[in-house]
Every structure is written in C-alpha cells, then in structure tokens.
Image (tube, rainbow, N blue to C red):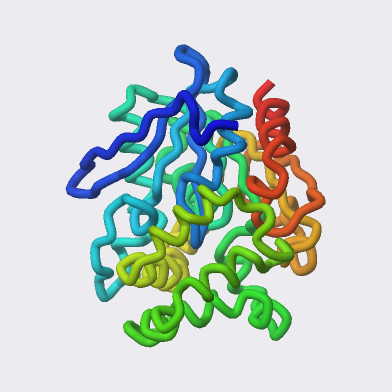
Length: 296
C-alpha cells in the first residue's frame, strides 16, 4: 500500500492557529473527520484512511500541539490546550473546507476533543465514534491504585512545568517507544516504519511541552467545562459508537457503554475488539468496517 496515495497535505491558519491536515477520498461523499491521540499525529489513520477513501471525503488533522500544527506555549490556566479550544479548531477547519455537517471519529485524545465538539457544536455532528476512552470526568472520578498505576502518565504529565518536560526530554525516543508499545500493544510491530518515523520526527521538545499541556488541561479546565456541561444537562445529541480494546485499561476498569450512554441523548452502541490501545493501527480493516457499518 502506497503511503497516503491519493491524499493531499495542507497547512492553513485559523484564528492564529496553524493547522496541518490531509484530505482525500470521494468527492461528494459524506465528510468524515479522523482525530488522532497521543503521542501520535494524523498519520496513525493511514491504513484506515486507505480503506475508507471510496466511501467518504476524509479530513485528517494534526491536533494543535501535535504533529505539524501549532505548538504555542501553554498559558497558566492551560486554556490553550483545552478540548474546547481544540474542538473549535476542528469546527473551523471543517467550515473552511465547506463541510457544514460531518461524521467524526476520535481515538484517545482525539476522542476527548470529539466529545467536546459534540457538545459545543452539536448541530454540526452527524455521528460520532469514540475509540478506547471513557468520559474524562468519570475516569478521574474513579481513580484508584489500579488506574493510577496503569495510567500513571495522566498524573505525571500534569505536574508543573518544566518537571515532566525535563524528565521526558532526557530520553524522548525511549519514552515515545515505551508508550507506543504499551497499553496492550505488546511492542511496535503494529506500526509501519513511515508512521514510526513521523512520530519520532514530531516528538520534539516543543511537542513534549504541548502534550503535557494537553494533559494539564484535561485535569483542570476541561473538568470545569465538563462539570458545567453536566450541570446544564448538555449531552451528545448524535448517535454514538464506542469501541475499545479487550487488552486495555478501558476493558479492565470501566463500563464504557454505560458511561457514554449517561452522556448521550441518542442510543449508544459498541463493543470490545481483540486489540490493545492503538486499535486503528492494530486493526485498521476492522475499524474501517465498523465505521462503514455504523453509518449505513
């Protein structure tokens, strides 16, 4: 399979934020946004995108703070990397591309952006798919020894600047490989060399800082926004599909469908898949088939 054959790479500025993204697929087909997680970039979707290009107009952005999108230094309140700010980027990008409504699928951090986008821009989202996450607020509220041990990075990365940045920066490639090969992935064999090279290229000092800011936001301002939304009775309005790996933390410690149904007006469907955390790269054909079946 040729690397991103038929796709075009772009960079635009939206409200002062540089957004790098790829587009491809079938003109006139429904628009589908694919959002990556940490510590990756949009290239994590390369196999899934190839399998979906005859069915959708595909948009694959680098979230702010990742890949070749903007890496502005974080503010004291971490608002620059709030999921609200990231969701606004994606909504603005889709407006720029002429897509008033669209389907969206997010893995990991991209799923958390998807959640906020579904609340803040509800009329624009036709359907959503979350991969290997439960709602952020519920996950923090359920913290115990087992969760803190498995997701220690949630608590390490939120420590004040520059402690985690300095620690990770001491051997960034080792840290990157450890993360990409963990959470049930059992090594790096699920990654194509081109993808791993991109992750390594992009895991710079500035990216390490902005990844930390993403997690700092999730443990602070994002929780404020989530609590406010719940207090107002705001829920996801579109239909929702939830997928998670049977070898990961979500399977072992959470009830994802129950938790997501509590945050969604429409019915929530989903299932576990025979995978670790990085499902779109471990099971790309299966993820593509899940999305096509969900939208039919």
